[in-house]
Length: 200
Image 1 (spheres, rainbow, N blue to C red):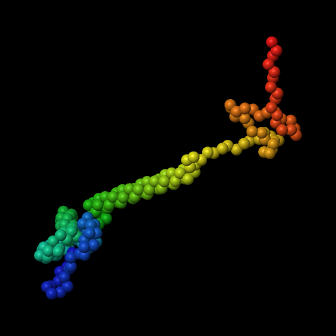
Image 2 (image 1 turned 90 degrees about the vertical axis):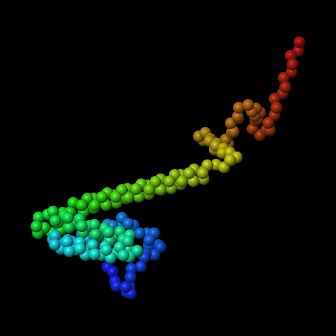
Image 3 (image 1 turned 180 degrees about the vertical axis):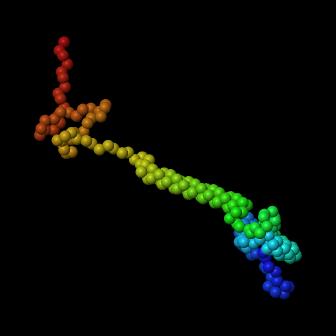
């Protein structure tokens, strides 16, 4: 619980703008309840009642300071002392507070564990999605690099029959192109003689 000093001494200053922006009320409340449970461990009903009176006094003092009116941790501590006082008042005489048997505490811890597991699963899914996006981007870049540029014509390599070298391979005539004139070894290509028209 927050302590106060007489006027003229050091007083609590409001948080800096950056600290206020990072302030998490839910986390502050959890911290306040945790402080109370740690202090109340092993206390009986009388000790808890005395601690509750002290917490109520601190709450009245805090209400007089404008910068402490919204102290979430202080309010959570007071509420937790009130709960423990009621818990021990309903228990058998001589019962002391044990956090390990506190049903409210166990439910809170289970909720915190479930929330942490959900955050971990969400983080893992985000990492997997980022990895898949990087892989798809790499595949797209690889496909763009291996694709031929427009206007580039790729020609298949000529294959020779067994025993025929590339120097002696003959091109295969394409459809519609005239066949080459026959030639003999050591001569140039000659056109065949024209046939004479028949005599009537």
